[in-house]
Length: 349
Image 1 (cartoon, rainbow, N blue to C red):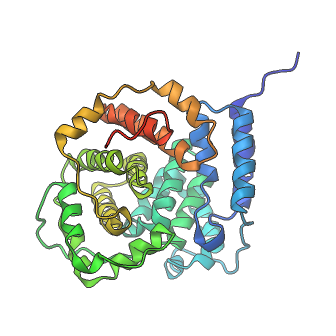
Image 2: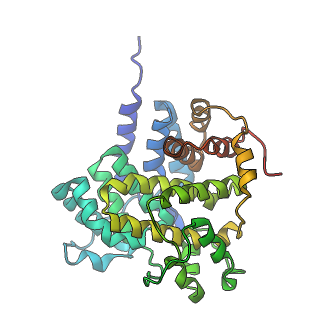
Image 3: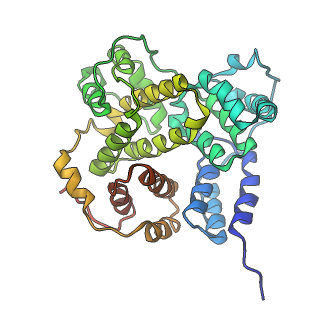
């Protein structure tokens, strides 16, 4: 009798090889494989599915080998490498030493204050890698993630401390959509480049200070993200749902000031994607409530279907949405995943 393969063993075998692959491939697209393999495992993917997904992803994306370090960094010099993709190998060595020295919590607690304002790094994919490192409690993954975050750090207009104008994250997006110079801008294939370009528009600069962040802001952001994705199924809106899940995973490793800054800049980055999203309007609350009552399969069935997909975003969304529903209880999470997977039609018409 052939012994049954262990999914956890297969996952660890695959993940052990991930540091050899670049964090990005052609044109700075983010390598999702290290994180999506974990998500695939969490939604019930078996050993064969894990192998199948990675081999397809590796070949389809033409993943690149990770580069070799050039020059050693230390506690004083590492900041000079922030925002420099070519220094990621050096940053990885530095953060590996720091995570070994301080542990995961200690390293995040020390370095997230320096990185929080660049949370849009690689269109939030460095945040993703950090969150999955925390999810696995893996020191190597966390060190890799911090290095990636630092190397791809994306600066946006800094907060000036002016008085906020709303407690509603959706209103921030609506006000951003009214900024005329954002309309008609050339859009790139890469989300981070669109965030960067919107951030360079002078009229966009005040956006970061508009939101009054309080104890319920994360929940309001999650509700806004869910409504926008429900209405649009837009690729960029998917990243709002998943991004908020990733911030929640990092929350226990942040002091309150750092968490608030991260949330503020995250939402600033989402506002910078309004052009990418097509400047959508928030759907009416009564309509959203009607969508909540659409009958869709339960999570086990949808997870099984998502686990068969070669699309990394199907798997990422299926996992993050089910985790977010555990926190917020909104059945609309199941509905949007069902539509993403093609299990129901377009309910917006």
